[in-house]
Length: 355
Ligand code: UD1
View 1 (cartoon, helix red, strand yellow):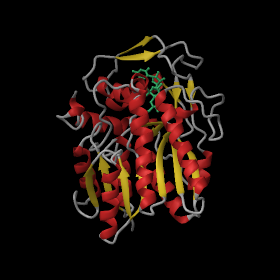
View 2 (view 1 turned 180 degrees about the horizontal axis):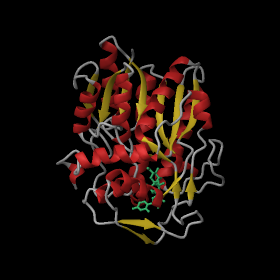
View 3 (view 1 turned 180 degrees about the vertical axis):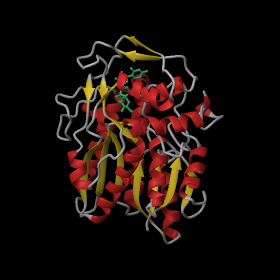
């Protein structure tokens, strides 16, 4: 099996994908700067996959994606060991919408500049297979749901603009040498849940921005209640509807995309990764209450600026192109999310994640 570079492999989606890729037999080099992740996640990835951290199966390089020289050294070292990096799965990036509005330059620098730095190093070392973490955020307020990949790209915040810009860059790059590049842009809907062991999961820095980690932290007693942003949306119960996808399904989607890219002729694959099912904020709270067996205090508050009423994926293209679809539902998501949060009330523990 091949050697892969996983940027941002210690993060939420990266760590779960590492477990799946190790199980599939790949050797992994993880590059992470731990700006929003914990090295402990990789210790646990190694334990779950039954490999040794620091071995040929799973090694770690602490570096910032923007340091092209660090990337070049990493590609060169792999080549000189006789096992060149065959493909890159690129998770490293910033993802907080509000922060991107406050500091757009930083978002463009890390998300776009970081990707430029990465693909430069890839190009130099003849590595031309890339799976990129894109986001359904680039659909903005969708004109139609379920959302197909051909829907207009109309991001409404700097974070979304950086995702759209990277997709554009990767398409331009592929068009310059279409016989060489194998690229997948995977547009995630709402990744949630955790590994069923409860050993790895989402550990946001400080106050969570997203619904799921907030609900889990209320359930475990870290926060008193959850504010539901708006009860007057045009939906059955008045709260927003999203397509929540179990992070293990998402991780399996990466494995499927990678194996399709490696087997088929060079191409750019742009695919939604979602379940195709919508759940409202109140559905999530109720399902989580069932999973944890305790009430989750919540109150209806003002709408949050920038929210769309309903976003749900049309996942048909991923099914057709990758033979992949989600296998886990909201119940599984809440059960596994609770297994993680209840066993790790403070996430990975002391360090940035405990704020
Ligand atoms: C958000 C981002 C999106 C990003 C995604 C990553 C915004 C506007 N969008 O998506 O760009 O790709 O996270 O996962 O930030 N909610 C509450 N109370 C809360 C938190 C959330 O009611 O404390 C509601 C929101 O209004 C929304 C739903 O829960 O209706 C889901 O919110 P969230 O988890 O933040 O995801 P998105 O907004 O869909």
